[in-house]
Every structure is written in C-alpha cells, then in structure tokens.
Image 1 (cartoon, helix red, strand yellow):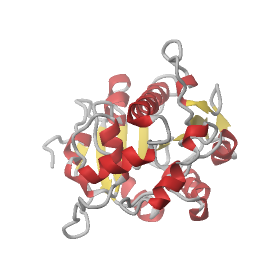
Image 2 (image 1 turned 120 degrees about the vertical axis):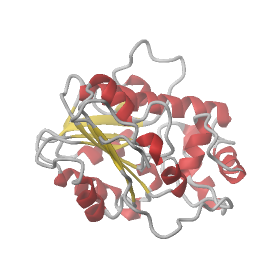
Image 3 (image 1 turned 180 degrees about the vertical axis):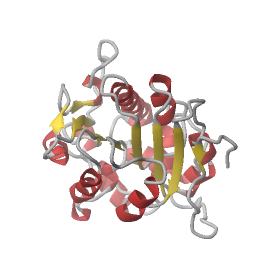
Length: 279
C-alpha cells in the first residue's frame, strides 16, 4: 500500500471486509467529531443521539479534540523525555493529521509504530498511517485485527517491534467501548504483561464524574443503529487499569490537566487519563 521501504504493509484482512453504512461504527463517529469526512449519516445520527443530553455535538467536539491533544502530549513526552522508541497503538481509528507516528517521528525519527484496528474504513486509509520517516530505523505498520485477540496482535506486532525493548502501549479512545463484563482490565493486563520493564501504558476513558455524560451508555443501549457501546468510568475506576504500574505525574487526571502546553481551557473535559511506567 506504500512504496516507503521503512513501512510494513498492513496484515491481510479477512476476504472482502465489508463497510456497513447502515450501522454506526466508533471510528467513523470519532472521525465526524474531529471534523473528518470518512463517516456516514448513521454515524452522525448516533453522535447526535449520544450527545443530545450531554451538551450537544459542539461540546462533544471540544472534548474529542482535548482527548486527541492529550494523546499528542503523551507521545511527545514518551518519545522525548522518556526515551521510548516503540509504540503499539490499539484501536487506532481513522487517520488524522496528528497520528502517533507523526508525533513520535517529529521528536524521534527512529521511532517504530504499530497500529491496530478492525474497522474496514480504517483499513481503507491505512496508507496514511504508513507514512514513515527517512530514518533507517524508523517504521510504521498496520495490523487489521481485533485487539481482543491479543495473542495474534502481539505475534504480528513482533514483526515490527522488538519486545525485548520498552514499548508504549496506547489505549486512547478505546476502553470505553468495552463493557465491564468484558473485563477490559484483563485485556490491558495481557498487553502489559507482554512488554518488558521500562515500557509504558497510555490510557484514557470517557468520564462518569460529569452529570451530562452519565447517560451516554444507556443512550447507546437504546439506539439500535450502532455497533458500539460507550461505558463512562470514574477516575477511581480508570486508576485500576494502572494497577502495578508507576504513574507519571500528575497521575490520573482529566485530559485537559495532563501536562498541558498552556493554561487549561475554560471548560473541562471529564475524560480520566494517565501515563504509567512498568517497573
């Protein structure tokens, strides 16, 4: 999909993955909120229903942008101050201008990044994710697969990443699509157990402290036109995902307050997040 010799072609998808335009998908809904063009009317309807009681779409867009900005700051910190050169981005979503590899390579051109997603629309745009670096050590790869299948994902990721060296596992904008009975904390542990000491976890979840977000999960249950759910969680619940890891200051906070580049905005994005190191 790309002629860049430092990029790894995406792993082959199942035969003819179909793009269902009648059911909303999380990646396309996120794309709509970020101002992208890779979504369909059903995705717009899902977003508008979700946020009808949560401040409206404009407020949702500010929150998604703040979430994306947190990801950028976390990657810059890891590629810079923390010296990380490998990233495993789970639940990548549709490419935007500030993808993990673009941010990492701007700081450390020898960074190696593996993206994982199972949405066929993301696959269709994977060539953007594979835009790599002129550094001979740098690379970007895409795996078409479900992060729940951690054994397969880890095996394929090892084609690009060296699991004997520290890796940043990125789970931003993804865990709130897992119900509690799906044991998302176990999934996090599978990936953290697979990476060596000195690795990091970057994680964020839609928050439940804000009253206008508490009904999002029920709205999605009631809406039959979506293939994803949404589970807001409190800071205490998100903190449990980091069990056994060393949280980087300022700990688990809302995304606006994780090492901001300037004063936090005059509105708050109640999405708990954090970055932690594996001892």
